[in-house]
Image 1 (tube, rainbow, N blue to C red):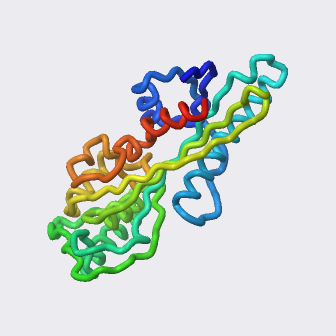
Image 2 (spheres, rainbow, N blue to C red):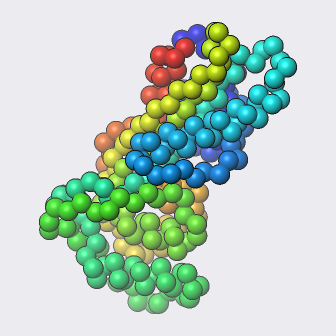
Length: 253
């Protein structure tokens, strides 16, 4: 691959920065500041649209600064966005789920955190039971938590179940004919979690680790203790499928 371009990552994510460094790409950081709101259609389209919005936002800033620069062709913008998706697919007996009484116990904790009331001394340590029937829960997109109560809600819904992590990536660059080009793709990874007790969920939230991550967890941190397995690209769950990204760069350039 002959990539003679200045690469700009349209993200402030330290995890994406580390992953790009890992594969030896030299790049600068210019975080997007656009409003990350798109009309939802499918997870695949949603992450690609969001990554394109971020890349376009940074592209406009770069072009405004470099419109009179003869070297403007040598710029490549990389935008990325990751979401966690729960439900929308049939869940089998192999995938755990909450029974109604488990949901009520976790909802009571959500209410306590929302109202800033101290936890009761007695905490039920029962884990979620396996679902007895195959069903197709409603699809829910989990972004970054708004607060601790939101993190608790997400982690309570994820535990013991399979979910999907989607990352969309967009390249924006000028080709050899001085034409602007856009190239987008996405990667999907299935993640399977062990059930967590309420004590474990609250302890993890207290660590602060969930608060800046889609789905309220980071697979590369202490939450790894609750990951039963994955099907797909691990780095995609961290925040950027750098193997796929490198192969796409080779195809484009």
